Image (cartoon, rainbow over all chains, first blue to last red; front, side, top):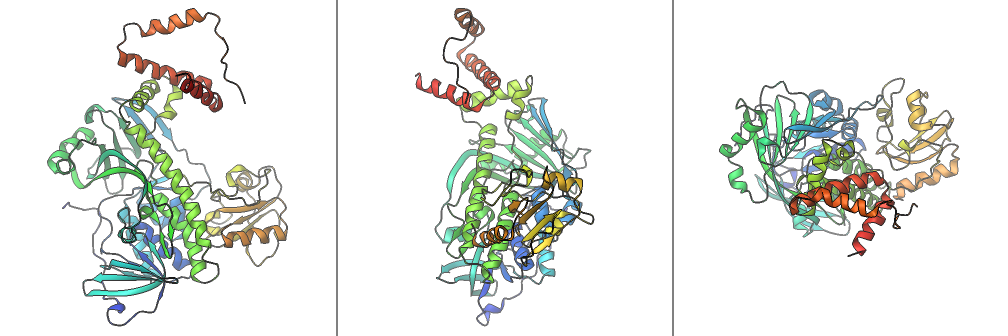
Amino acid sequence: MWNLMAINYKPFDYVAPPGLTASEPRHKVAIVGAGPIGLALAVELANHGVACVVLDDNNVVSVGSRAICWSKRSLEILDRLGVGEQSVAKGVTWKVGRTFHRDHEVFSFDLLPEDGHKMPAFVNLQQYYVEDFLVKRALDLDIDLRWKSKVTAIVGAADHVTLTLDTPDGPYQISADWVVACDGARSPVRGMLGLDFDGELFEERFLIADIEMQADFPSERRFWFEPDFHNGQSALLHKQPDDIYRIDLQLGWESDPEVEKRPETIIPRIEKVVGHRDFKLDWTSIYTFQCRRLRNFVQGRVIFAGDSAHVVSPFGARGGNGGLQDVDALGWRLAAVAQGRAEAGLLAAYDHERCFGADENLLNSSRSTRFMSPAAGAERLFRDAVLALADRAAFARPMVNSGRLSLPCVYPLNGDDDDRLPKVSRPGTVAPDAPLEKGWLTEALGGELTLLALNCAGPDLGLRRLRPRVSDLLRQRYLGRASQATYLIRPDQVVAARWVEGDADQIRTAVAAVWEGR
Amino acid sequence: MMDLITTPNLADPDGAYAALLARHKGLTETQSAAFNARLILILMNHLGDAGLLEQALDLAEKAR
């Protein structure tokens, strides 16, 4: 429907799959959905030596910007998958957010990224670019990407799952030890299994639009409460690469989506936001706020990741980023199970950790939604009171909630810890990055279980050992006042346990816990 | 944990009560509610302690 000038929407090649003519050997893993989450998982599994097949009912990257704000953690994950630097180079790096009430600014934040991290706090980049980069990476790794392959039936057995697929050449079947549903918020796989989301559906609609314009607009996030240009509702503006801007406009529940979707309705609204008519409308969509998730992300041999498992309202950058953190928590575990290096029970740890992560995202998103779109009565009363006070009193500004930006959660691990060591790298956190003599700690950690030994040798347990020279930043982030330390860091770069003077037995126990999902 | 002061703590209770009412004078019901909401947020920040706030919320709920 819209002109999309910025990216070349060249369809990917559909190739008639072998299963049409002869039965295929059972696959280790089948991933349903070639969006950013499915593709990232496929590359992650390939990095761990597990081949998979990726099935998508379409054959192009996503239409419209969709997920645009990629967090530092997501960029680190993408970097491990081989597309991080490309994403930062193409993306718009930003760190300032401004919040307006009516016609004046009430609050601004500067994410002030700490020095000594490879990746910036946030990058804006249209989802279709991330998908495009990941597809190319997947093809380089010879991953079996099957376009125009729509799942029409799914049947689970004790030790495998059978999928029926529809293609332009007709239907066929494949079986896989494990199926991962990365098929989005409306997940057909979830529907076929008869699974429902639990949680809240907010009675609020937003219009999102990508517009192309030449503007000297700074790389900032701008959010308006009750702006004069939009009749008392909220609005958000974000800069993306290729002179494309993303605008989100609150519509109210009484609005008619069919009317709101028409260019003749949309264009005058956007004109009011940007102050002129010199722009081109690239893409629009309307969404309803939801904060819901599946009760469990592992259902027999079918695993859910990304929006198929949980949906949050936007404004916190928790959809795409939350999904990539699912990939982070799932990839190494599924690889170990698929290769027989770990028991299937290890996947329960994925379920547990990512339900925890999803709940944190849902909590933050629900709170933001409630602030942005308060119900009549007390919610509205206090929201307006906060905005009125924010102008005059600093204390009210942190209560102004236009989305709390995604940070990785701290998993509730009970690995060994020592309170002499700094809090930023306690068990359950993602190991903070730091520059090494050559390269970065996140690069050196890679995707393998690692013993990070600082100012000591660490016991030889047949584990990969990393012993960088201790710089000031490493000392700050990993030693604090201690003179030495040993960290056990999981393949997803989460700190499993740490010791000032860890003995071999303690470390061995912690390693076993990682592979048993304790 | 700190205890919420629920014993008389104002030197001039009548004066404080009158000062509160004086600010509501002439306000419509909606304006009064908005005023109270702002006041609550200001006092809540001044309280500055989640435990004290919780006790205050409990008392407000029970006193109905």
